[in-house]
Image (cartoon, rainbow, N blue to C red; front, side):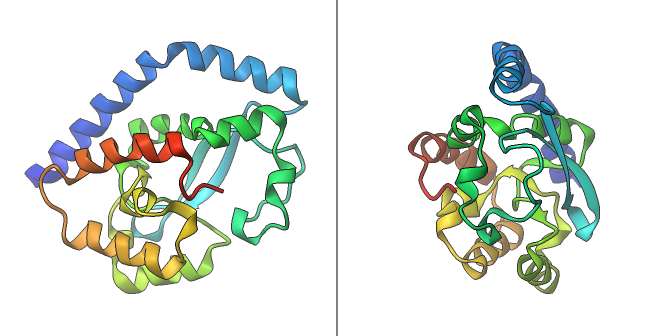
Length: 190
């Protein structure tokens, strides 16, 4: 019980600090999105969360309006659907920043398995089977720092299982620190 309280307290504190530190991004990114292409600034999408319950996940819009809502791996040439600024946002995972508000709401955690897209049926089924859907999804996770989209669904599921069932003190901090070079190097990104 203390672990859950500490994790939630950390999630809230971390989110507030990062939101405040990145204040200029909250001003600049929406302006760039609006200047780059017509449409919304934010993209809201249903994702699978804790206990396989659905929630609305927030992102900065990185794709052209009207793009079919499929997981990136199931889209033909998904990069051609990025807006100019959207490609840059995705390159540095800046499109994910609004998920800090999902963390504040309690839908997500800073660290955990990434929330599944409704079209990722194999991943959803594996998480239910392995019991890794019993934790909140994360902004980053062990699978993200171990290969991101360059690894298979089965490999991601194994990393998720390790995270959920072999969690150790400071594991979250290690994953957060490993996330920074992974994002900056764009290793395994789509």
